[in-house]
Every structure is written in C-alpha cells, then in structure tokens.
Length: 87
Image (tube, helix red, strand yellow):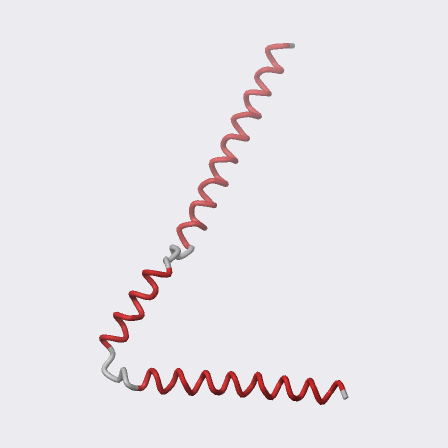
C-alpha cells in the first residue's frame, strides 16, 4: 500500500514538473516577443542621430512648435469652455 502511494506521488510530481516546464517555455516565448527596454539615453542618442541624418531637419522645429501651439490652444479652449460651463 505504501509503495503504491509513493508511486502516485512521484507520478504526480513528475506531472507537475512537466507542466512547470511547459509554462516556463510559454513565458519564455512571451518574453522573447516583447521588445527590449530602451534606456532614455539610448533613445535620445537615437533621436539625435536621426535628426542629424534627416535631409529636412529644418522642418522638425517648425512642426514641433506648431504641434505645441495646437496642444496649448486645445488646452486653453477646454479650460475656457469648462469655466463657462460652471457659470
């Protein structure tokens, strides 16, 4: 009787270990599919490199200022519309 019990426990442990290996492989596959983290320094260096290599680099500040102004305009309109809604 004791021998049969230990056999089933060992079989169960083997099954659990097998399931654990399968989960580990699945997690490894998910981890491999996620892009690696990029440090801020590497991101800024990449942006500077791209800026240096782009032929129309003069347009970048123009577009950036325009987008900033549009964002500020939207924010101002939202603030004034919410202020008039409270009246």
